[in-house]
Image (tube, rainbow, N blue to C red; front, top):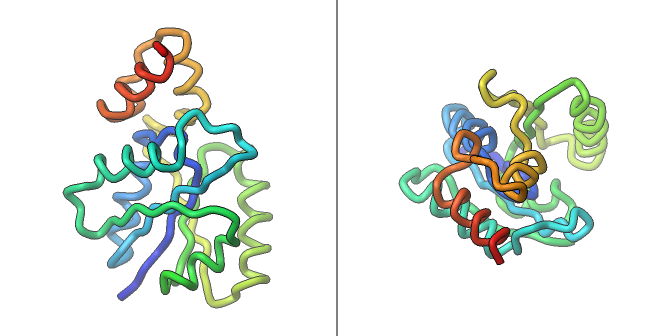
Length: 160
């Protein structure tokens, strides 16, 4: 079984993340969406909330599993889950330098685990979790960028 992990903070998960995850399913038997704790990013949603949001989105896809993780190297998480690849998303040239450095370090730590880069659909290339949160915080409509459960969760967070 060919397994890949797709690590990220997913705060919140967007249509761009969903697009990449579903396209990775065409290449792998199983894709594990790995929700990182990411305390340093000061997330809006807790890990449990982010996992719940992603699980709701992918509930009908048997090839996708959603898990959480903290304080662990991504390559170790990959090994623990028998993954042969780490999926990463690239939106713009600005992402490339960081992602290239990360992939090179991961290859140094685990030469048997490949890093595979996906770009989202051209209609989603500009979507980021940070921008979605900013739009939602200011009362804008985020329905073009996130699923209904995420839109509702954002509205609940910012109305509180």
